[in-house]
Length: 215
Image 1 (cartoon, rainbow, N blue to C red):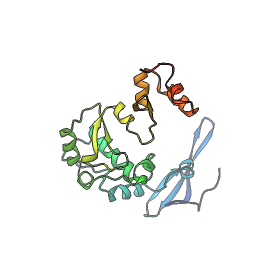
Image 2: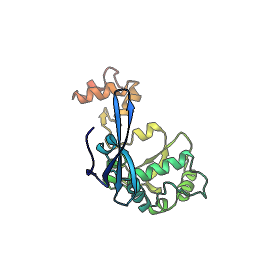
Image 3: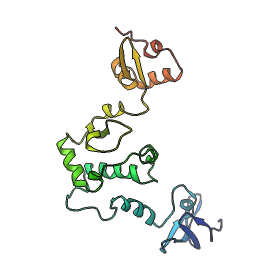
Image 4: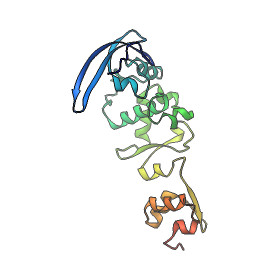
């Protein structure tokens, strides 16, 4: 067991050994830590040594509260906190404002924000969604993938439309027909991976779309 007492991991300082737990291939060690906010907590050694900001939980709450995202005390007036629509709303806020979210670099990290109308109240987002075609099998999609989450730039679409609107999509033009690679795959009834592999090998466009000859 490596002694971690005195080590500082972001907002946590290890102050004492707590206990260990026997597992199949050895032991797991737990350490008592003091957070910058004053709270005393116990954390596993591998959790302290892993990625992500370490705190007693106050860091995440502070960041999300700053952007009006209540974690343990969600708004109860709309009675929709357990619905799919509210989960979409919560994830939208996380990827735009929570720096430790796995896809933050694709959203908030690129400057993508949520309009004040939606950010300040779920009800506004809910009302817009129901007036603009939301149903359970659709996902929210930004028309301009470099734009913000706001009424004029969002729509509810199926998975094919959303996949076709990604900023890293490949666009090919052949015989006056222009489509993204996913669209070509569906048009030709070929696996997307087949076309993608040909594209990565820098094949000519005729060989990428081969073997089906287009008219």
